[in-house]
Length: 535
Image (cartoon, rainbow, N blue to C red):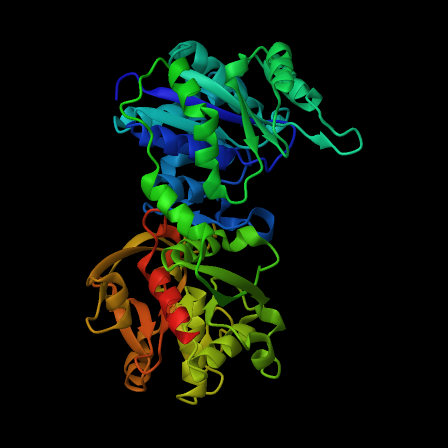
C-alpha cells in the first residue's frame, strides 16, 4: 500500500509498563477510525524465537496460523484487533543475525566486512517494512522490546532513527512509553526518570513525538508542562496512562486522552469515521457486571507464573463475560495433586481445565484431576497435553491397561496410548520443529464439539510432538471415549469426548490461541456454559 505510515513504540525507565497494551489499544482506535492496521514486535533476545524458552523465563509461547512461535505480546495484538498475525509480526535479534550470517556465508556481501551498521540495521529495516510492502495495511505499529538504554536494543533504535529520516517526518513517528512514579513520602509525582529516559533516547539520535506516561495518579497541568519543556514534546502530545482495573479499559482511556487524534495529526491523516467501540464496550460492560460466578480449576505445571497460561486466562475471561459470569480461576499445581488429596483440592469447582505442558513433572497429578472430573461429572476441558492425559487416564482406569502412558513420559510403557508423531521421530533439533500452525479438523455431528462450533469443518492451531496412538483407536472408542474430531488428511485424532458425561472434551490443538474480545472461542463459551449448568 503506497504511503504506509509507521509508528514506533519504545519504552523507558522500567520494563513491564505495557508497551504491548498501549500499541494494541492505539491500533484498536485507529482500526475503529477506518484504517487497516497491524502491529509487529521486535524482540532483542538472541533466541531465534521463544519456542525453546522455559515458560518460567518468558511466559507463554504463542503460535500463529502460519506456524510461527512468537512473543506473548502477539496475544494482545490478535485479541484487540480481531485479525490474525504471522511470522512477519515478530522479529528477534537471533533471526536477524541468523539471516545476515547466512548471507555472509553465501557471499552476498561481496567480501565486505559485515557490521552492525549497515548490515544488521539494514536487515532490521527490511523486516520492519515487510508488512507495509504487502499492500494490506495503511498503518503499521512496531513495538520495540526492552527498555531504552539496554545494549541489546541499540541496533533497533538506530534502525528506527534511519527509517524516520528515510520515510520523512509525516510518515513515521515515535511514541515513548515511560513511568512517572509517585513518591508517597513526598506525596508527589516525579518527572526526573522520564526526563532521563528521553535524554537517553535522544543520545541515540531519536526524539519522541509523543510521550505516554504510566502513572498511579492523574498528571496535572503543571506536570505536563514540565515534561513538555524538558523533553521537547508538545504539551498536547503528553498522554496520561493511569493504572486501569483491566487491560480492556485501556482503549477507552487512550480515546479519552486523544492519543489517536494526536497520532493522526502528526501523520497528516484524517479519520475516515469517528472511532466507535460499541461491540468492545458491550463486552466490557458484561465483563465488569457479571450476574453470577463460576469456579474453575486450572491444573498446570507453571501456575506460579500467570503469563505461562495467559491465553487460557484471557479466553476464560472473555467466555465468562459473554455468559455474564465472573470466572474465578483457581491455579492448582499438578505436582501437588495426589490420589489422596485430589478430592480435597478440587472439591467445590464448577469446572476443570488440564493445561498444556511438556515433560513428566506433575503428570500423575494431571491424571488424578482427569479421573476426578470424569467420575464426578464435572465439566472438563483438556488442552493438548491435557487431552493426552485424559486418554491415559481412561486407558488405565476404564480399560485397565496398567501403566498405560505416553512415550514422552515412559519410553518403555507396555501401552503407549500416546506416541511420538511419525514425522517427529527423526527430528533432533528442538527449535521450531514441532507440529505448528493451523491444521484442519472434521467434527462428527451430534457431538458436543459440533454443538459448540455449529459446523463440521474447523481449523485450529497446534504445538506438539506427540499424538493419540491410532493402534488403540478401536479399543478406546468402543469403551466409550469417542474420537469426535479427526484431521481429514492425516487421521490424527484432534478431539476426544465422553458422550455420557455432562461436558468432557479433550483437544489436541490450542483453542486459546484463537479467542478474541469480539469473537470468543466457541469451546470456551460452551465450557463455561456447562460449568454454569453444573453449578
